[in-house]
Image 1: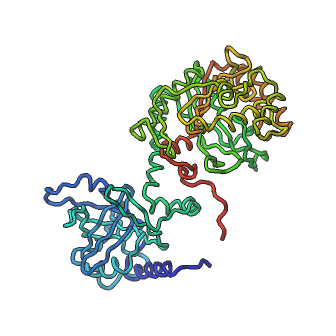
Image 2 (image 1 turned 135 degrees about the horizontal axis):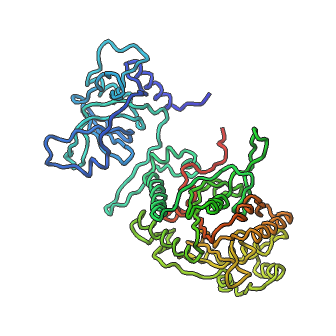
Image 3 (image 1 turned 120 degrees about the vertical axis):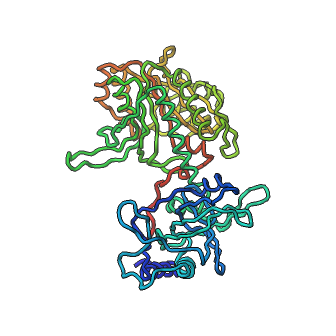
Length: 532
């Protein structure tokens, strides 16, 4: 049996006492709110007569119990507001009349009603002062006024119990200095607890909810940008027979009815390109992807990517499309193109800088890799003190050099372009250099944010690239791509010239909300099992 604290035992006793006096601590009926805390304050008018009547619901966050009158702070989905509760004014809710439109009244139906109706004194002295606690949900009907201290508040006339909290919330106290800066005391700040108990984190830590509100705004801004150009949002399979579209280690599951193993998708690229074959001119998807790899401050095994594919375009067009999109999203969400990322001032004002990958490597290491063989690049890695192993092919060796020696240097938005062909098995040959591909990655704050190609649409070339990936897999590279023969077949039916781009939504949210860990922008990040 779960060990209960003294506070938890006390709250369970309060729950029983509420039932005994005829109040249901968990009523099922509708509670008809008509106002929110922030809006009440914004719209307040000292000269309004009669005073505005409101019906508001939320969670008790603090109380100052006095004699015949007390104050409490109520938190709803938008913010907090003070409520004044007077013994002589507060009343229980009216009895329900039945039907769909009845009020959410707290009369208990599981026990016999009390001999006498609850009066104002009982609601104040018994229910409010003794049986309610911080964290409980209540409904308040009353009028809005300004206290002698100048605080806009609600004068409660009717109180409804909506939900009894059986566990106490951590109490986080804030002190505001003369400049308006807030300091938290007794903060609920342990990351392990915050991520595991996100529902508590959202309640007690100011600003956490705003991160996820901004996340929604980011998605909406991108959808508006795509939809304005008549591109179509689609959905593609999460369970796939072949995990294609990226180089990553997949999760494996089993389908009992078909008696086959399936893979959780690592990317949705190949399915979206099948739709271009099928006649769509532009398609996009916000996809949940799954990669059975490490976890750290920038990686979670379950993450969200947005991928878009547009026919009759190339990677040069996609660079302009991408930078305009990122600039728009930044303006829509933050009202400015500049952000602060861990003390770094980053500007998303277009246009963004462009540099080829090999030029970036030359600039930061002094080595020109153009025309070098795999063995020569392996020797350069040793000279640069970069750890490599026999499973790494030419592309992965180049990727290691760029990741170790270059990537962290690109703080301002920069397009790294023209990747070696060994690194890009789904990308079209560069039109002027057959050893390169028409690919770019957008680097921001030392991390990849977006990845894009002029898509390979030659089925013969695509099959040969897949076969090269198979050789890497046979050498021991467990991130090499699988051969997807159905995708090759789709290309044989003809795919027009196409450009595609993928962007890591979690990293974009991190940037635009000033967070340094991916766990801060995921409502429920992956955690180790909780120890009992």
